[in-house]
Image 1: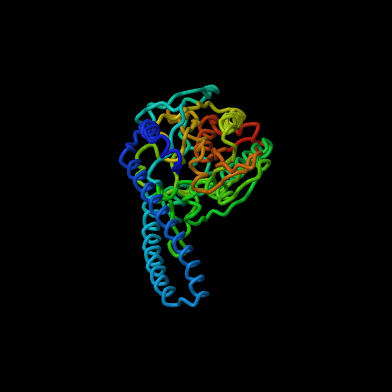
Image 2: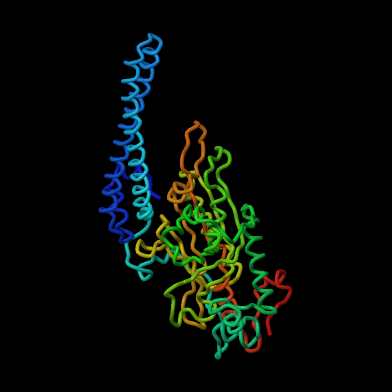
Length: 423
């Protein structure tokens, strides 16, 4: 959530920057400033009434001591009128604040200066490529056919048990999942991230804190009876660990990693690009989250991108890194780098990670702050990244490592899988 301070000081800057995201902000910004001015006016009037009440209360006390009860009673009536007016002002202020908050959450985060304008994914910038094309057999198969051939992932059984988008991993397919989760977590903890195991159900306050609510409630699975949400990513519970906290200067930065299953309704996603593991409703993902001081957050972002790249390199897969344009940037992000793997069998790029800096957008919602060395309280910067999302990594691993009669496992994973190939 953008700060009122920024909106007051430079509304035209906010309007101009949000246009990079193709978001027309003028009407909302003007409404927010109008509500903010009204709120401050109500506060000024309320403070004046309170001061007047205190003054008159002192007068009443003096009159009572002097035995001037009639005069005291008259002033008491005036005080009662002031209290009634104060009650009206408080009610008006409460309604004003509700409307102000409702408008503030309509504004997306401001993109940083590195983000270029653009309409959609076609306008994203390729900042780096790596890896080599795999040597595939002539009759190379897409991963959903490989899964069936070697009986390692059963999509039809998932439909029977739950529905489309909920695959069942079997045998070496299940062991490969477990191996990747452990490998990713080990890579993250070796890089200084503290592992946590959070709940996979969160309350609405957690969803609001990281920006999933009210923006993405249609994409989240909701448990109506208890008003809980299944997590779309571990980012939500892990970042909310720090909600309503003021960290000491030496408690920043914070580096966390977590594995969770993730749940997304993916409403409106249809077509050939959703086959097999390409788009699921339930999938496994390992996440990294950082809480940083503002002056350090972009160095932290670069470090996270380098870290994710190092893991992809170890898997021996062909990849590219994209910097998202304004039109493809999420509602909450100031900047995002996407990692994609090349699927030669499908002839397309598969997204496996997004690494983002939210600057103060989430921390303002979370009331996540730190006290600097001078004792001043500031908003933190929050960052997160997939490290990594499993489904498309598995798809690329299966497709790119297929031979005539088996699928080879990358050497780095063999100590985790306990086997060298799938046949």
